[in-house]
Image (tube, rainbow, N blue to C red; front, side, top):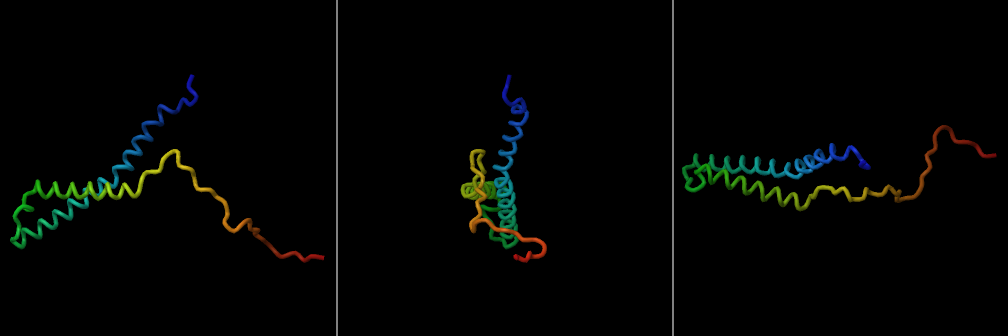
Length: 108
């Protein structure tokens, strides 16, 4: 008998979620970089000063390489939270406070 019978059902969801969260900046980085490099290629073709960059495989590979490199640099500074990370402690910095509601009482 297992201690937690729901573990096999939930473990793949957690792994897939972590994979999606890990590869999300890579996807958007590659998408953005390919768009920027393709725009530079288009402007170079219009100006007539296009040699190596005019070949689509070179343009796409530069965009993919730039996107993956940028996303990996982003990922190094923004790691995914671990299960073992401790939650931040909720200790008040100024000490206990007292909230008064209603009318003030007169002391006698």
